[in-house]
Length: 426
Ligand SMILES: NC(=O)C1=CN([C@@H]2O[C@H](COP(=O)(O)OP(=O)(O)OC[C@H]3O[C@@H](n4cnc5c(N)ncnc54)[C@H](OP(=O)(O)O)[C@@H]3O)[C@@H](O)[C@H]2O)C=CC1
Ligand SMILES: N[C@@H](CC=O)C(=O)O
Picture: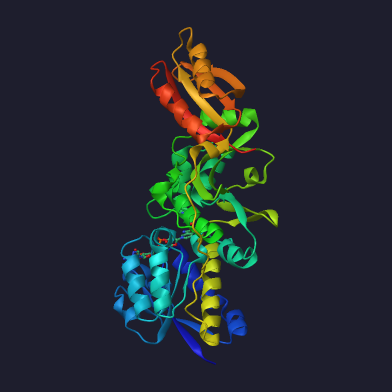
């Protein structure tokens, strides 16, 4: 039996589980591919820390050249994370004719196209199923099963850490800090969790999903990205009283020949499937013109679920090596798309406002709403912690352009402060 040697860069949450799966599931992989897969070399920063976890016969080193310059190693798994030096390392690996499997969404969202070109020039595979929604096989599903359908919308929960934090805050009354600490301990969060909680990790995933779904190359700078740091317990309770759960959603839609994508907190009706997705689980709802609405659910973070996606890529690369069909892009859908007009992006909004407790403030608010042509379907007045008046509104449908005008007009009124403005899913 032929043996394919593998190099592994990173032995943390995901790398450790990849090593475990490659060791424990060897027989099945061998049965399917006809090849024996064997990890030859592992690269980490601190070899001492990992020595005990490395099986006999496997080289553990901090020297990347031990993989790059080893002609025996055909497939390299990059699970170290971050854009630099991962980008330079993968470039070197591809130029050294090695097939690369990565879970690195930061890198693929920022430089995926460039790396795919280098892979093609070298007749190498570059695969990254694990970069979006951890254990959910969403990218390959879009490539294969939506190949002929026009995807109209992709939305969902694509960050496990924030969904875990929101679930613990909503169900167990944990503080934000307590829930984040636990998410880090469980290995869901990035080594620096800023990108998780600020919505940037979800935005990277929406960039990749949009490329697969609409063939378009969005940039993070083109998207509005908001995290969960500003969600207050009062918002969570008020949303619940209105019949909604707050979730951090990525939403992308084809609108009039353009592609619109955003990440932010959204009020989801409690009977909507996305409201039922808890803990580190993710769910991606793909709406196709022909197929209609579909939902893909599963663990979005964690070692073994993510490793399962990495292994599916390794098996695909192995089959391509055997069939001599390497060098085809993971996704080759390319399509031009224009800009989306802010007048065409329409949702109801949840607005919470702080008002100085002096007469005439509600009248001012109503005047601003009327002026921009918006109206509300629900309104509640309570108190903020500092005893100022808190007014919470759910608007009728309004455009992003109207929301922008509303924000501008409210900024000019020093007795009213807009605390939060979240989309409401119907
Ligand atoms: N954790 C998760 O649930 C998921 C993670 N991902 C992605 O998978 C990748 C890995 O994540 P995760 O396993 O959680 O990360 P960890 O922080 O747990 O592990 C990172 C590993 O990479 C090694 N490493 C970091 N920098 C270097 C370097 N310059 N040279 C050599 N080795 C290096 C570290 O070595 P040392 O230990 O010596 O410091 C460590 O072993 C990231 O891209 C992440 O976004 C994707 C989906 C889910
Ligand atoms: N930090 C990420 C890990 C998976 O991509 C998350 O929490 O979703």
